[in-house]
Length: 287
Image (cartoon, rainbow, N blue to C red; front, side, top):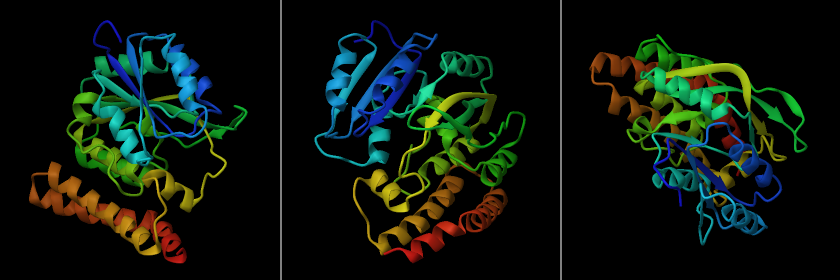
């Protein structure tokens, strides 16, 4: 157990991560910012993940390890690590990614100085299974100085990937949300809610290295990872519309002005249908 309340909580949900989890843990434990806890939630892994985690637990008291009896799906497992966290700041860490040594310290420094910032994240790049760089994922967005409507539209129209969800988040703001919802695109949905709560600070330097999975781009594998099971064609179509409904629920929850609420609902639906029509088309083609 840790001796004092940590400033930062790192939540690492993992399922069969034995191949890369040692590198991920070493990268986190080597951060120059030391006052953090690392919570690992093992989603009933069938490989050597448990043994590896126990080895690290014995050597670093900042690590807490939990294991699910059954695979509850990635979304629920991601939420569970936040539910038991203690820090004023929180970050989700994937068991196959790598971080520059100053990742936490630089993000936390901005959050401590700029109280209107709800999320701080750096540029990220793809890496291969061997750790070779595959290029920058996409440009990030920085919404400091923008009003709430401008922030939400910047996220809707400009953010191409949900990797900012792996930045450092102000815990008090995350508690004002319903965390990751059981829908597709759950990372972008949560980021949209964050945009209504505060500003995003972006560090234009590649400090997060995301390992591209061999099944990257597979719709079937994505669904199975998220929910821990396969779903039929009808359920997939419902997941798409559920995502749209969640955007509307978030707007209804956080926007008090009726004209502003209606305008943002309309513009959000327009954006989703334009930018993500390929999701609906992809779903309709699969059983």
